[in-house]
Image 1 (cartoon, each protein chain N blue to C red):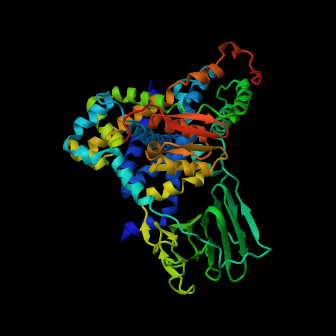
Image 2 (spheres, rainbow over the protein chains, first blue to last red):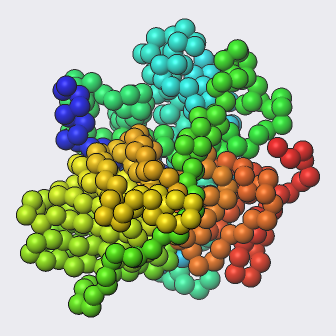
Length: 209
Length: 353
């Protein structure tokens, strides 16, 4: 059977992908809000779209890396951003030169244990509930059945009397909104640590605290 | 602004592909379309990876939701209970996971030994420390990945590639070489492969073999009779052939039985390759034992009811604090640091069960 053959051939690849998504979920995603907040504050010339570009390119780079060898996801994320910004600078997009030095400092900080996602699991769950509560009603029910109740995609469609395509549309909308909201949320502890706005002009020393 | 629209579109397209990929395997046309889209722009790939990871991450949060047991009437509980209707009884989020746990946590104790393995000098030894995952390239082109606190001895000759798993767990990706079989010995069990990938885990009384690619042959001692005598002569080793996605646990207690393992479950079991541990309904006790393997500091649970509660989630293997905090949050417990250990204890005297 065609299906069997291809499954065997691609098996190793498939296996790798799932673990890598999981790895990225655990080691990179937790630091996205912090990173976005930092970029927004530091890069006045960057709009949200530029930040989206940057973050997406960073995820693509990290995907291409051998994540098994990465010890500190946060440090790696910042290093990746630094490379990308250096490339942007070479392509003469406007990147303040101090920024690169600042990211070096951030790498130092990120070698320390960062704010841990697991610690805030309850807040995260509360946050997710708040986002889900704002979804349109049917979209919300579809999402809850699929994710919270463990229904399969097909089961949701059957159970709610919807086409699988409609279920897909609802889940797409839910994931896009949730992903955006979770990625953008600020983490208070980090912003106080990294965001002394007063240091904007003169901020080469990070090690004094 | 136009750019805004484009950005929205990338994230949304990525979300759609992530959802579709998770609904089942993509058809050929879909796959081609997705591949083309991913190739078109680095941002596409990045947005897609991000969306897939977020989807995975939602499972973690959903699992917390499932184990947290909100007081009745709280808003999220209410909605699924209504839509669930007569279905709900058989559809509780934990039921599938508990089932899984039952199928996973079955094996128990007898003494194993190193009887037929003679250790010789002149072999190379590799070990990983606690909390370390080590990838080692062997000279024949094979790779082995050592899980935490593991040790192997490698002896490559012209006729044979002998690996002896002395402690812990290792995954082997074997370079194809018909003339030199690749044999991993762990306690009384030998796993023989030509070109394939498989994991072997040695515990005090059992050897666990899981195949991810190709076919291997597993030989182990037959179960002992009640008096401790070997039921059949030592030469009569039981041999089983294992194909990809199959697993066997060899103990002295029972006839080995092959078990086929779903791809997702297999990935979960091998999450340690990426420095992660993953639980899907195992008891807190089992989860703690696993995470303790990876850490010098240890988590201790005295309360048997708490110890029996199911745990779901993916954790960094060395993140003892993160794990105990998450478990505490999910299971209404408290993580109390106490010298070199972290104690997990129940918070309130609610009705046990």
